[in-house]
Image (cartoon, rainbow, N blue to C red):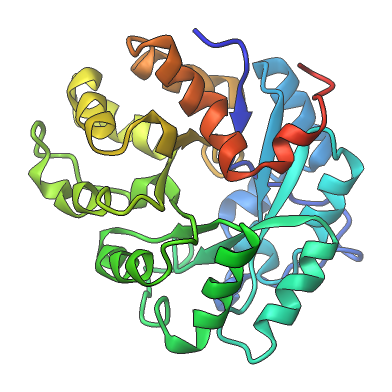
Length: 290
């Protein structure tokens, strides 16, 4: 088992509502952000207990919308451990300038949120031409774009991956594939098809380990097929803490248990190597916990 772990999908919520007011996308705040908010110091305690060295903290879209102030400020407090992944209105006329502004505050990746816990997926604008300037910009600047969507959005993602081959795309939760049919998982054909695009990467989270468990699937059957298509260098682990219930250690242990049979080199990629390749800022400074 590897001894270094990075997390590319934790969230933080400030307790200072005056400095960081809620302004969720779609106008509805998520229950998890209200019922179990975690600020940066609480996140660090969870990470230390779980043995996780570094993280790329993802904007809490269902709490802060396009205001990335807290995720940027939180990461700036601990630059040796964190980098920030934020959200912007990619179709706005000044979207590239807005992205540059947030980059100056530490943003090293973008998030495209089309739905989730507060709203059904709406991918109608995901590949709108007005957003193409941002896709071009991210490809030139090396900013990956992680996308929160479901199988409904995979055809559009394929078109985006083809149009913008220099832009790295990360599918949150593997885009929630349907694996309920068991091996050879034909219902997840969209996920397998996207592996043809080298710039498509996968975020391995508790939503996946839960799916495997709930479907009663032998983990080896699913992960062997997954790595056969994508390879471990295009898969990175993320805790989805605290959106997912349970401690960060519990979420990490579930992932360890399901892929613990893989060769160590593959586990190293999934638990830290791919994360460092997607977010080079994680490699710059030695972690205080390492």
